[in-house]
Length: 113
Length: 112
Image (cartoon, rainbow over all chains, first blue to last red; front, side, top):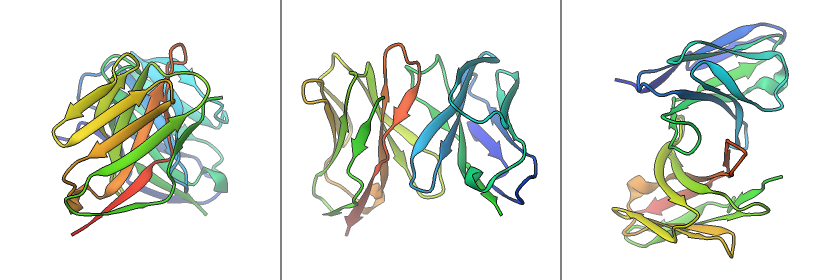
């Protein structure tokens, strides 16, 4: 069973479109995250949620909106996609916040044309 | 702001040798330091965590050291195998910042 699963694996879309990436964890963890990995492989945090509450919101454009319907799910919705949004987006979870190890999903490669 | 530096050049070593990867940080001292492995097309996988009051941590063929004076962590893989070839990321947790900050990673290539 996949611990942290995110869909889709690949997402190719046109500029200006709106898209969503879904993430689910079956580990019973309290905290979930979205990270962005750019073309230089730099992994940067975007958001973190603890028990459905937003904890961290890095300087991310407000075109990006996370939604946590319950503590096992954290979805990422992106409005008006831009070329610079092309990257790999990783969902992750941890048991008790940032002092614990993170479990990552396999990533969603977003290509904006 | 926090800055974490890992060697951007790939490290090439022969099977059976010890691989040593470096993670240097500036400014604030982290409370925790973690090491992850990332394979192409996959998410990072946790390997080891070391706290600021710990000098060394071991797990099987892996060893991590943490020197708060030098502001450096070293990650060692002994008796390296081709299957150890991957990118290795260090990540720091700073007290009060509540977020894990990643380095850019070092690619390790182990030749048979």
